[in-house]
Image (tube, rainbow over all chains, first blue to last red; front, top):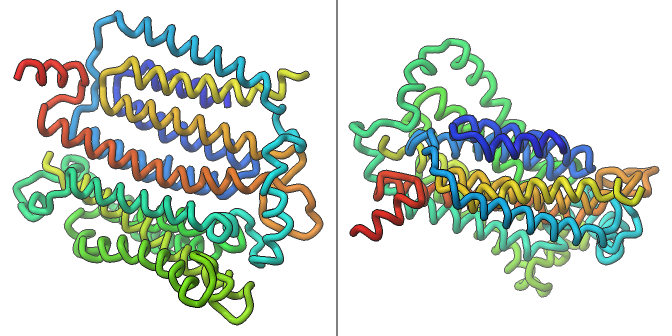
Length: 320
Length: 117
């Protein structure tokens, strides 16, 4: 954790935004390691896939479209900011004095619904991974909301900078224009990525369907799946990648995932249960839960993957 | 001994304040988004820290294990990370758009241009 703090300070000091972005990638990776140490394997998985992968690529894309050097600012003004930050920090540290010590099993957080999930989910849902049970079944509403947020964010990006006519004109430079020439001719990159991409996609599918039993699930699988395509688009050509998975397809999956999730909820209603109650989907509650979780994880996966792919392509299609 | 148990929280606060400082003290919009990200990660670490139970293991049910860490914060943070990257992408999209209109991503220059016009 000390390492994370050091990276944080470095980010605050550095003016070169390229270095800052690289450091944030490293920062996320350190955070992922920390999550593993703290037993949060699912979270670590997500952080490693998202923080060190997709968000770094997006940040680099923005830098390529804007400028990679921060202007050196005149001094003054930031002193007050520093004072404010230190004061706020002191107040927060004072607040932590009332917090339960690290790892204390008697802390209030462990005595409300958490023991119920841990004890009952094995029988009620029948899945070993409690995180998946809680995510998809007990807290299905929350997750539905999150999926809608991702959906909305992707739509927002498409609306703000995704004017499709830019992409069709060849005169516009691609985002990774200069990089491209060297990358396309580099044999190691081409062969290596060709070997890697099928494995990445296969791994994404494994994570998708195995999320009930081990760490994984729709969120991670969607991100990994998207990163396979993004790697292809980076190494080869954005237009080639776009013909392989056209905008229409990604938009279709973007909507399909959300509709599938909500549709499973409505199906529960029609069959006489509550919204997002999967117990009524099959003959006995446990297999109903299985089916429901499998379906909505697939919905989550397809929305996340489609959102990430379309966001990436929207950035990559900008004029330089 | 009492303070050893709180050191995780303090590092979280240091990280959080670093992010906060970047957001309020820098004019560069990309840097501001990076600051927000650091702030965000610090909140994640805070949640995961609270979820840890001493002697517990990852919340995947297995025979012979009785103590698990709390799964609920894991669920919240897992979805929050993916939502976080989606909203970051939205923010970066806005930055790209602003750059197109104003040809700068420094906040004070943008304000200056608004006043001049």
